[in-house]
Image (cartoon, rainbow, N blue to C red; front, top):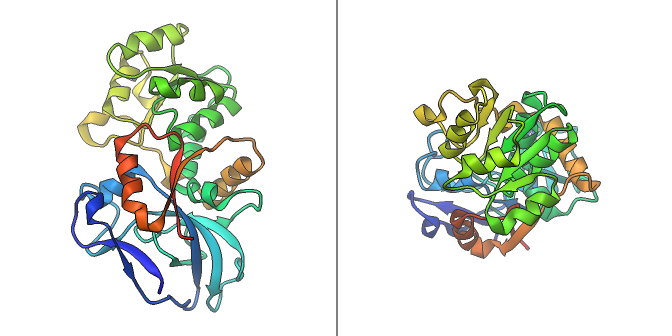
Length: 305
């Protein structure tokens, strides 16, 4: 029988349990997708641990994850843009971690480029839309010097490359073990932690125009100390007083067409998008344990086969 990962109480990865469910059928306007792979995002554990559950509409019992790739298994009456057998990627908030899911044409779902693996495709929805939206929002040019935190993470990897495509100079914070990787993406790597402001000044003595925070309040504080105007600072990691008034542009500000563009850029090799680890569905909890430990380069993926 089809499997579905769920939790009945908030907590750490240990609350995630794999159950069996009936195979879904497509009603009018619906699409049943046979899931091939699922991409993990930090927001997932913020949801199943509880702090972000209300924000993202998770009620108990709840499923897990958003990003997926797969093959259209069945379509309902009225579906016109997708056909059985189409390879797709998209988002299904709080129920992607399963063998099958049900979605609609109006949801976040696009055709997967043939050259893109299911594993890479599964990781793109949240980070691809977020990176695209944040870079586009600031109209970056070759006159900009951009600070991007967590530059080796899922959003950071794409944001660095998209900003470079605009001609911007990019400085990215990352652990020392990821410096060569960040440099290979075209950014100047800087180690985060104590003394980061001085290291950032040394990396770009001309000064900074923009900051894209994917990590937390330390980045916002550093950006302000570096003289970046608050209206040129965006965060996807901090809300409330700690954001100091920074903007909160993210994936919600990107369209499905934007996601399709990012997928094409990865598929044709114009953007690098590494998968750092692949887990089977029955070990999804272990994958989340690794994600929570941090320092993941690119994306962690769970596969159903």
